[in-house]
Image 1 (tube, rainbow, N blue to C red):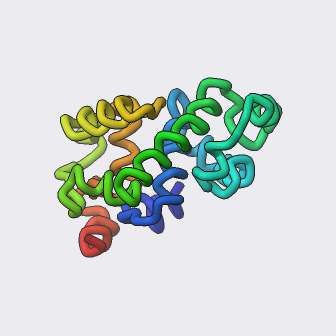
Image 2 (tube, rainbow, N blue to C red):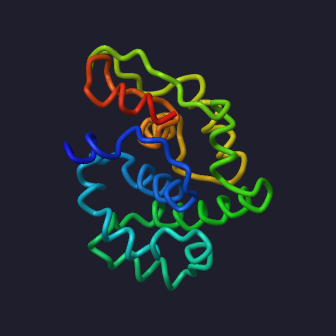
Length: 177
């Protein structure tokens, strides 16, 4: 968890494959600990073809059954089907706008928002913006993108810098705008 926090969490993402990975992993985390998902991340990368949404979008019912037997990922049928459906919705956004990156960064006018969290008691689970993004994603066919999941996704991918005030990573991530 420390390496994830110190090297990855909050760093602005601009690569569509990374965006798709974050959508899948944050959805898979629903009801589980993030540590569980981090431990399975390599298994997810292998099972979901390096998070290439073009490949995952072609997965069939046979692939769902194969994945249900894969102990390297969370074996939850709804989450597996969501990853496949989300690949299709992801490709639709890419076809319409050129990239998912362009679509998602438009919600923050291309600049990460700077959170005001001072400590664990201030940590937000959702915001009006995560509500808006969640609703937009759902309307576009995504699943496992509730507001709380979306807010975690926003934090992880750098749409919002929620490193607490005083955290050594906060100013470093802030400069990555």
